[in-house]
Each structure stands twice: as structure tokens, then as C-alpha cells.
Image 1 (spheres, rainbow, N blue to C red):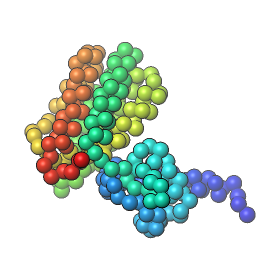
Image 2: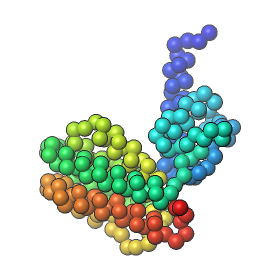
Image 3: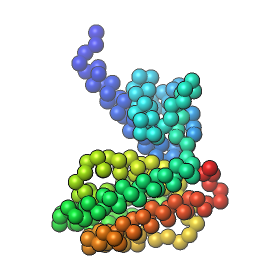
Image 4: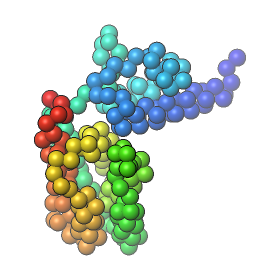
Length: 227
């Protein structure tokens, strides 16, 4: 006989597999365009069909996976058109968030930006083995969020977070294609200084250039297939 604990347990299982799938999608462990077969996923993640299906439907709503009629789920593919669309929207949303945060942010907001900048600078983006460093990734996300955190719009932040995740799938690829000398730490420092100085024009210019450079690196990589 079902108990009250059963739905709670089911929800917990779904949340756990959702988090794991989402992280593997963003890290590139599940490759763009890859078929997501239930039997394989059940074995890999040690999960039943019901929470797995619910997690995939949630990821489909976020456009990180696709559901094709009569074919099932697959990892959302990457493309030049998608990358440029994400870039356009990120520039607009992030600039709006920064402008609003500059208008509304207080001393504590400024202090948090300086703190996250300092923490990010103390970590390298890649490990000595050339792998993406998870701690740097966490600090990088915290830094970029700090810039817009005082914007005062919950919906803007929700859209912005989703765009950040979609861009992350592409951005993490760029670490492996250093086509030009690039000082990430200096770029982050310059953006932080402009925001804390309440220079909206400089801050929005720098954040747009920062995003564009990543896209330029990916599009110029000779052995990366983005159609």
C-alpha cells in the first residue's frame, strides 16, 4: 500500500537524477546529438524508468535535451545559429541586468563582486592535467551572478541563468581551443571594476566583448564541428 513517503522518495530520486544528468550535459559527458536510451541511462545512473522520464522531460523543457516523435530523447545538438542566438540574447539580458544592478546595488553588493573576483583569480580554469576545474567553474558562475544579483528582477535572473547554462555547453569547449592569447583574469577584473565604479557604459561594453571573444574562439577552431 502506498505511503506518504513514496511520492517524496520518488521526487527525491527524480531531483537527484535530474541534477546528475544536467551536470553531465553541461560538462559534455553526454555529447551533443547523442541518443538517450532509457535502458542505457537506467544502468548508468542506477535509476528507475519513472523518475528518469520525469527528469528528461524537465530537461527537455529547458531545451537541454530534445524529444523526437517515435525516436525518444537526445542531447540537444550544437550549431552556429544556436550559438549566435545565445550570444545575442546573453548580451541583451546581461547588459540589462548589470544596468539595473548598478542603479539598485548597495555596498554589500559591491563587496560581493570584489570577493568573487578575488576568489576566481586565485584558481586556474584547467587542472594540471588539462581538465576543466570544477571549483573554478563554481567560482566563475558565482562571479558572473554577482554582477547582476542586485538587479531586482526575479524573472530576469531566471532567464539569465538558463542562458548561462546553454552558453556553458559551448564555453567549456572553448577551453580546449585556445586560438589566441587570452587573459581571462584580466577580463574579469576589468568588468568588475567597471561595475563597481557604476560605469554602466563601460561595464556593458566589456561584458559583451567578453562573451563575444569566447564565441569567436569556438567559431575559428579548425577541428571543432559547429555547423
